[in-house]
Image 1 (tube, rainbow, N blue to C red):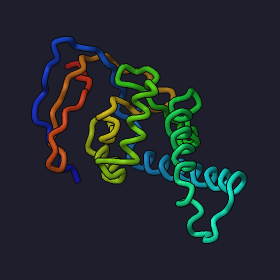
Image 2 (cartoon, helix red, strand yellow; image 1 turned 180 degrees about the horizontal axis):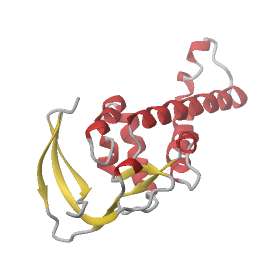
Image 3 (cartoon, helix red, strand yellow; image 1 turned 90 degrees about the horizontal axis):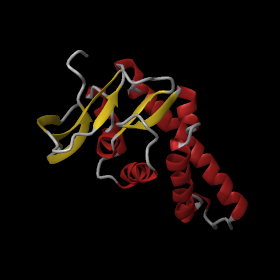
Length: 188
């Protein structure tokens, strides 16, 4: 299910180096869905606890979470941005033994993690399509990872090599989007 086609590699005037990892170091589709399931469960349980413990309950119990969306949004932000980028990561990351890094192999800046979170919440790419996209990507990146410039890799992964970061144009469901990618050396 890959409606994404690579159009061209556009070289930058000021090349920036990035890193790449062994193919089995990148988190694949099943691991990513497991992480999403675990992390959404943690957010739901913690949100429920905070709402019940600190807020008046609405008359209609079905509106418990919906009526407190700002609280859920804040908890989600803290968990999916601050905790995820920390050295320990989310429960989903801990259970699967992965971490998130920038294309340079470093800790992801908070602004990039915030953008990644906002793309998950508000789109324009539905998160199921986003995760399914990674099944055909050599770096197993979701569309959000491509936009923000992140990899989800094994906790103990070490870079296999360094390469020039290129701007690559893709067509995705009628959109033309330019992503940064690290070009693997010709020996790989």
